[in-house]
Amino acid sequence: MERLLRTYVALVYAFMYLPVAVVALFSFNSSEMLAFPMTGFTLGWYDVAIHDSRLLGGFLNALTIAAPTAAIATTLGAMAALALTRRRFRGWTLFAALLIVPFFIPKIILAVADVIAMAALGVPHGVPAIIAAQSLIILPFSAMVIASVLIRLDRRLEEAAADLGASGWQVFTRVQLPLMRNGLIASFFIAFVLSTSEYLVTSFVSGRTQPLAIMIASDFRFRLSPKLDALATLIVSANVLLVAASELVRRRAKGAVG
Image 1 (cartoon, rainbow, N blue to C red):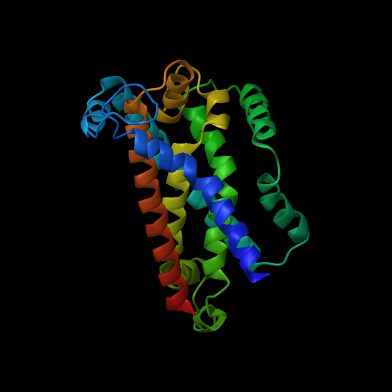
Image 2 (image 1 turned 90 degrees about the vertical axis):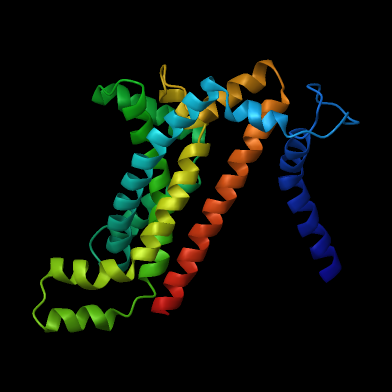
């Protein structure tokens, strides 16, 4: 049974990551044709991708969107996490359920809902609409990351500060915030990665704005090129490093308060 389970896990990982490995492999192919056998080894496609002004513009657009999106999602996620872990109020169960519902709703439905909401609010498609839409779909992830840190905090520290006369704001700024700092950093990293890789929802509200994810998807539709493979490999590598860093920060936060 254990051997069968290991085989199943190995197959799942192969199904998930083998396509990524193939993309990375072809990024080193000296030929522009994506076919086996590879004709040679080169790093030239990475140089081409890095110096492509159009792709560089998409990358800058992605950063312009990802930074404020991560900041907004982390801020709102922290507020939601504090409400979940520090308060019991009428409608708490409904609030918690609504917070995790986006995990189970198809993104196409969320995208359509965002389009309707933006139209009702009069928000034009473009950078502001992308930031708003992405912040809403990433917020639950941020809330869960920060909540995982808050539930491990020693509540007696907050109670002691309140007993000594600290106001609610002082308890938050002088006790809770320093202890949840690493959780906020981890949340920001994860939100940043999710923002840069988000395609479906972004494509519905992007208008003429072309973040890198939309640009890459558009190019892949019409022409396969090792240049795009090289760019995709760079993006995946950067995202892996950010996720690893966020997990390291989150574990340190748990260790510090555990």
